[in-house]
Image (cartoon, rainbow, N blue to C red; front, top):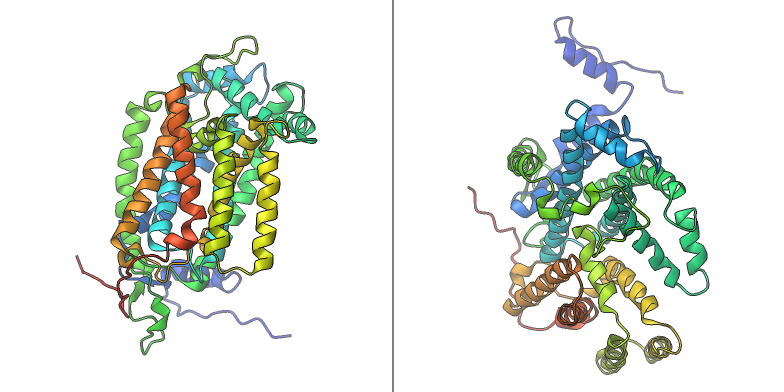
Length: 470
């Protein structure tokens, strides 16, 4: 067994240096800092799109800290929950500020995550060798959705109560196990005190623990393979004499300053929202949620918070009449795959058989539209995980793809935003039709990606990153 050797410092060494050395002899604090940030080399051509990862970490810390202070006064009891939130808002010193920081932080979190995912989509950050980073990121996204859903009920306002009622009842559409699954999630036959208690436990303890583990895995995987860049070039392929990539720079101090500037701009905007528009016109905090939850009075229009509404619109778009369009779309996709795909005949046959079973299942006499709405609702989220294997483009970055690819991304982005907006509105015949068109565009973007991502004339990718100093 090797003997323990403690680092020796000169007698006149600063006390801080001695203290750090004492810690480093017992815990790799400096090594962790250098490996994960201090001496981590990142591509030198990062632009503003690469700031949202750091902002996501900032908001995660903000949510944890404000959440801790809120739990000091919150009562997870159906008879006391709403009153305890009002007590925090009116009686606890700065309680209103902490509550608004937490509620605004939830929306800010999803805005940042959506922008972070947009950057990955534009620059191919999910492509080899970063597939696992993308999967960890997708798992983080699922955890955030679960965390937001469980936290949504806690204020016990009208929209919290009825929104949770609607979402939990969706699971009842699953054949055979649906009713029992809904009962298990609620812990009762209706949303009640049992539901509030288990949602509180998941929101405060279970999901945050999983989330922190996934964030750590996401960062470790990122720093293992290295960061991507707007050019989609692997900087590790061009190493200098010192063993570091020629087109990279240390994260500290260069990107520390870069991120601090982004944090300053974010905090300015965040503070403006918290102090002047915390409800954001009812999108961040619904007006019905300032009324106590009443099981005998249903709001005129029940909708989830805005960050769920794109996927909620997919659910609402799946009507009985739309099922025939979906059946035709599935049949056309099978024919397209059979004619255009390079898969083996056995795989094509199996794919066609599964599609045939799905088409039969879409008949109204077999499974109703509500079930398929839940399937497409879940599918619209899960399909994101398969992005690394759907994109067959010979280049990663949109910079070197055919010009018309930008319009494909634009149409997809606009469709997603339209779905999000329509999910906040009361359904009408016209709005339902628009959401159905946008749903088809949404799924077509992914399911046809193996073909359209390879089409057109691609630009030559340079050997070194393009960098223009400021």
